[in-house]
Length: 460
Ligand SMILES: [Zn+2]
Image (cartoon, rainbow, N blue to C red):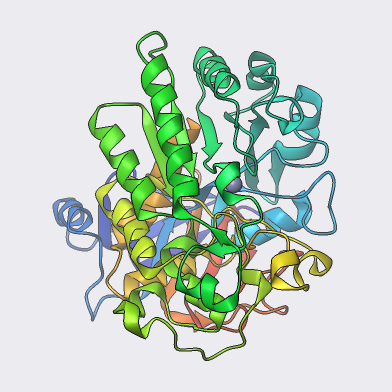
């Protein structure tokens, strides 16, 4: 962190998801505060531009200014595995990725199932990055006894979750949902039916069968989603404040089930990850095309890299292009309110092993925005959809105020060159673990500066 910023961001492509404005503007920041935003074509045009998707024209400036991003799902490893990622390295990585607020999952060791651990491990602020704690839904994340949710909310918890483990016992799941409702926060569920997914290494399909990997079937997610929705439907009448959020959904079938439940009016939301919108299971076989570049099933494999990169092992697994397309569709139509990174740093000891022995997880907080921008370049996602999914959407779930590009407010902004590219590498990434399958791949969108609460938190 350096001193309060004074800078005139002239002729930038500015996106304000809070006010619903986009277009070319000058933004003046004095002593950390936004003092003026002047839209070149007026506010009416900026409103119309946001409504039309906020996509710049070919002659518009390529340097953009957007509010600092919010991640609703990340893992730092403090305490338990600080060598993989601690608060110091995680917040530096977050600021480099454009984030100003990160909600941390409770699966530290020990789990954040009590106020003391929660405050020590996953709350607070570092490098200007605000950490919002998500507390364990059950004691020890063991799924047998609901945590003291009221005490955890008092300590700052914005949600409860046993992420990494589904709450398999339906009675416990129901009790956790009611406890969260009583405390006014959502329950975030990792949807997986363990009976169907045990030992699963990759999505069920052609890639898994060709490579001899044990399948983690799409029904393993769908069954869990359907069961969670059934419980939600059952409790909503007696607990009107209940809120259920299903995180990192990966299949077309599960997203369709969520869409249908939302159509019933159930208080249900979900998110998708950058890797599930952009990568497919074919990457495990050495294919390196973006999900939207795969046109038909019969050309599903074009290996250009080595197979079995264990950085691709993740839960839920990477899936078919069809499922990735459904994840993008869910963002476009609002079924999914956010892109959550599921940033899951792991040491080399846990990842540089045989594919089936590797720990699940992809470190993604520094590449998420670029992956989304790759989808934007392919005209798969509008900038308005991307920015909302990285700011106002997660803010809505977490119950925090999203910052806009608002005169009078402290500046929390990301300056990004949309036209430039970069390559994630050991040299360019700030996170302590670099378990990403995107290493050395050219990605669009270079974060030049992240300003948090008026201070420079990252500068390229
Ligand atoms: Zn999970």
